[in-house]
Amino acid sequence: MYPAHGIMGIGPFANVDFYAGSSGPASFGPGFGGFASSASGDSVFLEDFRIDILVPQGYVSGTSLSGSATYSGTLASLNVTPGTYTWTWDSGANSYVLNIPPAPAVPELGTLSLLALALAGVAVLGRRRVA
Picture: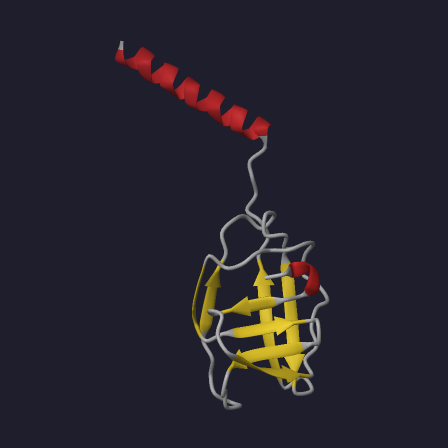
């Protein structure tokens, strides 16, 4: 995955055939995202250097492909920007959609402090009732 160049791939590295003529995002984040920590299934790669689609060698048009890739790290460490990104080819008849969800909200320090104070109060009240 190379977000700064709009490059996305799934599946393991393998011999592939190149097809030109796709269009897609110039980027979906800053910098280099890295290599998948694990991958399986069919290899499919979308890239912007020559606007290519890479599919398994000998692929027959219309045949379903299925692959996956898992990346380690957070959205920030992978240098991706949340959003929906679409690559198209065959004059828009076919497409690949990448949906990057927003990062989960992290509680503010004040919220955590308030929660800790409330839990401490519950603990004190519980001790008084026991005594």
